[in-house]
Image (cartoon, rainbow, N blue to C red; front, side):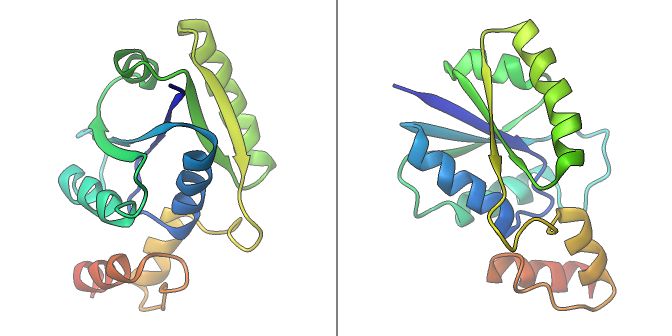
Amino acid sequence: MRRAVVPGSFDPVTLGHLDIVRRASQLFDDVVVAVGTNVSKSRLFDADERIAMMRRACSDLDNVSVEGFTGLVTTFCADRGATAIVKGLRAASDFDYELQMAQMNSSLTAVETVFLPTSPGRGFVSSSLVKEVAGLGGDVSAFVPAFVSEQLRARLG
């Protein structure tokens, strides 16, 4: 069985994230979405909320599960028998950072990193930008699942 991990903070999950997860689910037999739960980082949504949002957003994907994790993603992968980490790339700047991470990860374990470019029309979408626009009263419904848009409105006003 080919198992991959799609790691991230997903604060909140965007349609760009879901595009990467859906595409990974077509490439691998089993996909684990690993929601980072580092409590030292400030997040809009806590770990349990982010995990619940991702589970709801992926509920139609039979070969996708969602778990929280702390620590090294390579340890998470090894513990679950995953052979690949899937990362979405929006721009060249993402590649520069992610390449360094991929090289570090491969020096720590045998896990490979697979880069998937974002689909056209999603390259500018990030959780940070979604939160900023939503916080200023903008409509982000085109960039996140409807239930996430509602949770953002409830949280940010």
